[in-house]
Amino acid sequence: MLKELNQAINYIEEHLTKEITLEEISAHVGVPDYHFRKIFYYLSGLTLAEYVKNRKLSEAAKDLLNKERVTDVAFKYGYQSVDGFTRAFKAWCGSLPSDVAKTGIGKSFPKLTFYIDVRGGENMDYKIVELPAFKFAGVSERVPMQFEGENQAIIALAKSITQEQREEMHRIQNLEPCEIVNVSYDHDYNFMQDAGYLTHLIGVLTTEENISDVLDVIEVPACTWAVFPNEGPFPETLQQTYAKTYAEWLPVSDYEVVQLPGFSFTKMDKEKENYAYSEVWLPVRKKE
Image (tube, rainbow, N blue to C red; front, side):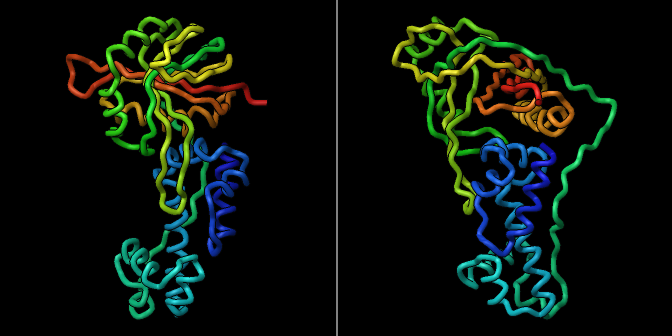
């Protein structure tokens, strides 16, 4: 995956003066867009759109320091108007584009390079589990994508679950980990606006054939799963675990993620405020 990430960085560099779409970037590296976007964010701390915007504005600052006209620079980096470029540049740099040439003071955002930084002293617990074909069954809703903090739309979804739906989930639940799980899938994304939606399901794992139509169902084929337990402040520890699976475990493991919905579950500690035990389940296969 590090190879693909660096290929994407190089592709972005080659297209900074052209309109870049997420689909083009992910197609170039051969990684589906949502999966690639998550990996990029967890490893860099930036969304892919933020990174592209910062690189464009950094190169624009160089051109302005070289006395190029603001109008020419704005259109060179894909802005539809000088006003739009000026607003974006001032928000990023803290000064107007016209001031850069006058003062000789700009701002730089260097090109990223991804590499493995091997550090000792901290273990990452995981286990490999084989599951047969099963179904996620639960209640789902389209919600805004959000990588940090608690997603209020998902909290609202959890509160909307009826007693009838809860009873049906309890009746059909029959597969490890035998917990109420969170599943995200069917993602869309507006790259230029750095926004998008996904479908989030709160439900259970089941092999039952007869499931009430009060629940939504996702079919999942037999698969290998990498399971990462974690415990600590919620949701920070859970999100950090997702980041570590991509940043530390996947690059050096014998596995790669496959394109199936992953899931997680969380059990809040009744004795400690905002403290929980969670597990992240990633669908994987052995690398070829």
